[in-house]
Image 1 (cartoon, rainbow, N blue to C red):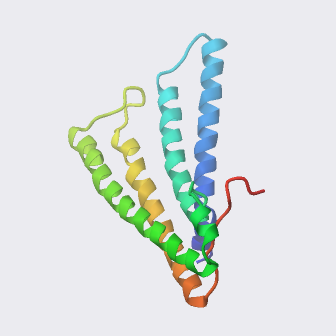
Image 2 (image 1 turned 60 degrees about the horizontal axis):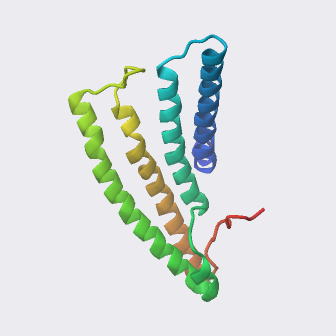
Image 3 (image 1 turned 45 degrees about the vertical axis):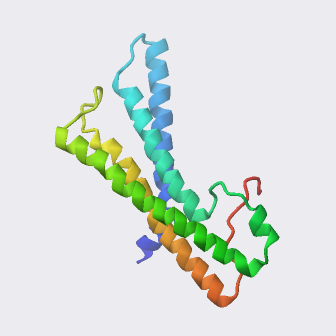
Length: 171
């Protein structure tokens, strides 16, 4: 249970850190190889690119968890605080609906990559591993959206203002 709590609190952070370190390591290594050793690899660019893709989707899930995604707060700040929970809940429901469509349609490209057994030119591994980033990212976002909606419903029932997250330029 303690492991699951830690995973819930920091899972995306650890994954983002791992993918970010992978990107930095591979790019620095490729720069040294290209300009010092006059040699470069085909796989380095692919590893960095696909790590960046996973980093972006995991970051989107983290943004949903922290309610740090881009939004226009003008309407929410102008309305009574007790109504903000309903607005956030509506936004989460709309995002959940979009995530469901995205998971469904992105699985078609994953299935196609599996069916045709396509591989990357440099790494020679199945492209489905990299196309899987989209449904996995939206799946993680779905879990975080459900958690956010449960928090909002709890706040509405308790009469508390909804968790607003941080503004873009908060310290």
